Length: 434
Ligand SMILES: NC(=O)c1ccc[n+]([C@@H]2O[C@H](COP(=O)([O-])OP(=O)(O)OC[C@H]3O[C@@H](n4cnc5c(N)ncnc54)[C@H](O)[C@@H]3O)[C@@H](O)[C@H]2O)c1
Image: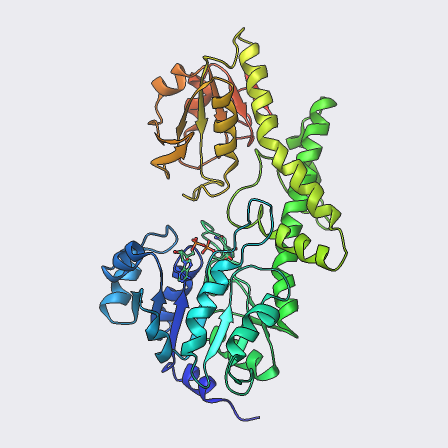
């Protein structure tokens, strides 16, 4: 079959690419396309982000401002709140949020809003790819009917595919360009067009037979993480009861050269992916009468970890004849993982919340986060210094940012709850580990 017009335009780099939603996923992707020589337009509802980008400033840690500045200056990257420009795009990538509702049901309203912007402007031959993590069936059951409205046919009048985003914020080794991209189109022509789009910017494209498979791939990956983290968190609680050092167990098990992959216990899950995505899958499975038991169980174990950390804080304070009420507790790290600035769903927020409700005077240090909204007010970060560490009755290591000097923590803190094994080999007296 001869290549379609869009495949030709992608090959010649004359295709114009639109990215809807310029967040942790959309901005790195947009800059990657622009670096590959395409003219890229970001469509964003947040006017402040649009302004920053057009002024050549990055607001995402993994995307250097110097890259954005150079791409904006040469006209290869721009952002807009005007969705009418979608008409002049050859390919459109949707990278909007997919959170959960309070009931833990999927909230696909952002996807629907983005598709409703595209539908009335859809042009013949355009390629639309959904990248937001979502349940299997979303592309075919939700997106496709909206785009086929008015008699258009997918694979003939336009192309539609799903390609999960796998970016790992803060990972210096694997970034958009060298993470293989799974692609599933609604029709073979859709798959070819989407594969042509990503081949221009990523090292390897992995075609799969349908959009449903591509959607499920991402959910398997994230459920795999959630369940294994749940397992190792349960191991940590079990080892605690049996007086066995879980960290030593994991390190020794990890020497097995096959069949074992180390996961580490911690204060709970965070971020926009691992605590959220598996519930998209269990919700959809339930529609088919299937109970996804591993997902629910991992959710319970992981969701309980902040309470376990607080229990450790109680034990630490008790060892100094103190109650939680009135004690000063300093939490180190509120980002959900090391060396990034994202606090979404961070277990540190739960830990601060529980402690504050129990009457502790809470504070936090985080080199990546200036302030958080906590208990109805803005809580500003406390500087990381010996006097701050000394002033606390208990220091909780919640996120092991590399820039924290754990030697100082070991030297100055009165008692420490170490949920990350960050003090390994430094101090044991007055240290309460998971
Ligand atoms: N953050 C990650 O590490 C990660 C990794 C892989 C996949 N994902 C998935 O990618 C998707 C996006 O996540 P993210 O972390 O980039 O979210 P984000 O919140 O960082 O960015 C989303 C952006 O979309 C914008 N937006 C919302 N509705 C819009 C609309 N209708 N039109 C235009 N812009 C709109 C928001 O203003 C925001 O700037 C989610 O489905 C997420 O699960 C995220």
